[in-house]
Length: 245
Length: 281
Image (tube, rainbow over all chains, first blue to last red; front, side):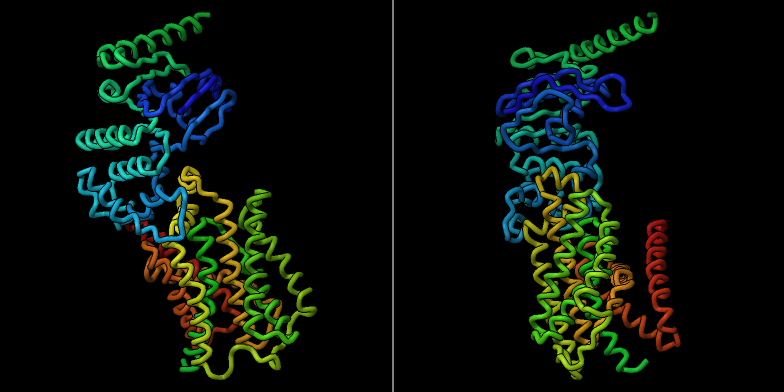
């Protein structure tokens, strides 16, 4: 469904490449959690998969449309449009000369499914909602856009703990129902352990851990933390050696 | 201020509303600073004047003006998209070129059409009905379009181009379409004003953009543009108010030569008021 081969990416002004030859293959319906320290290249990888950035070298093969939720909620939604218009927009990839309000009942049902009382704002501009509520709508848009590949970049980061759980449960349910091939970036280790069939850790532009199956289901937070520290220590040691040289 | 002045103001305000709608489309829906109005409006007038003076029925001359001015709007979009020329510069270049084109079309700087028999006569009520009917023919289909899937995607182009790309919306196609519609509206307004005045002068377009922009901004200042309905009402309301304000200013002794300064002042005042309002919020 998604195959990434030898992806490399550098940005002008940054000496070290951001991605140093990423290889990754995901099956249909596979849910992959992507973790790593800030600056490890996670978001850049997602932007290359979505087509927002082009890679310096390598190849991305997508077998289906891509839907994504980005970190910046203003980029992922249109605050001047109503909630209905935003969600209807994500469903118009094959547009018709008919009124977009035909989606209203279905959209209302989808919002009701979330069970957070947002349905009363269906005809209000998104600008009246909080950042977290808008992030929820952005996720709903991505899940309803008909794409077969779903990219989530810290899509619950702006939410309170209760909302985080609700949205994560909803996301997982929708991903399973629609058999979406998913990559989810998170800094929440609890989510990383709890959700997904596969866990990938990135460090300085490389995939350093790739776990699935039993290995993934047996994963614990202390073990994940230990791995985090191990790679951080290694890189500090490496930088120290370079400084001595 | 006499009743005649008010009625004339309403008549001209309705035509100005068509221009304001043409300005609203690129500025508010496409985030495209389009300055084609100064060229497309007189182009519409020139085409209409020449068609009528060559014996064509005035009702047939109007579509000719609409198509020519619409194509000019399309050219602005294509110059911007294909040659990556700044949108404002593309509009200025084409408006400058249109001046020469208009002179070529007419063969001289002005044309009198008193013997050609336009759509309008001395019955102001009938004239207004014709303008209202034509305005409705432009605005209502566009308002319906904006409520379809295509219209939703059209609005997304200006409001969030990145998201629009993500939704696989062809920004180029929608921009070309939008500027064609805007140009067509300028062409319609040009042909109507020529038929109303029975006279076409190559200089009628100078500053028309700022009149239309002032109308749009006044309308938005009065009823806002938070919803689609309000956005669609703003040009009409703004143009009618603006034309009456202009009439009041003239009746109070403002020299016609000072009108452009007056218009610019209104635009600046509305911008300043909006800024102050935002700061207070």
